[in-house]
Amino acid sequence: MLQLIDSEFREAVPNLQMIPISAKTGEGVPTLLELIVESLPKGPPFFPEDMHTDQPERFLASEIVREKLFHQLNQELPYSVAVRIEEWREEKDRLFINAVILVERDSQKGIVVGAKGSKIKSVGTSARIALQKIFDTKVHLELFVKVEQDWSKSEKGMRKAGYGKNNSYPG
Image (cartoon, rainbow, N blue to C red; front, side):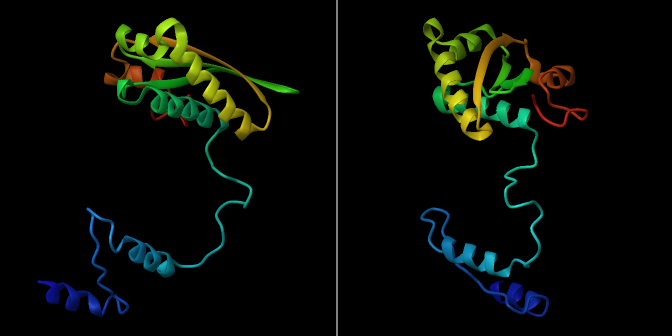
């Protein structure tokens, strides 16, 4: 079988190489990655060097809050959580962001808020610090948790959360 595959592709891919790899140990993966990078065609950059993403700032903010939720709540976090930016106001020395964290059940809201608001406060602090680094300005971040019953199970709920055909970003 190996000979058959090798002979089929030898003409179409003259530099064909067989790289044994192990998913279990990772053996061979660095070599494979090196060969892939070497094989990529050279070309002009698609974006200016100082441009780090093509996503809107609001999308970045919502994703940073989601990231902090995932990091701090680990296994407790419901995967049906979304962050929607409700308000975005820039002033000369500060950025004001008001975001809603959507969950599907009251019990999930309790997990996100934490005892006496400890989790939401910790998530907010961590997200604010990251946002200040990215946007290079002081950030005033307000987070609210809202229960939207089974929002992830309907098209209307997904649109309200910021996901859908007419939305360019969730937020």
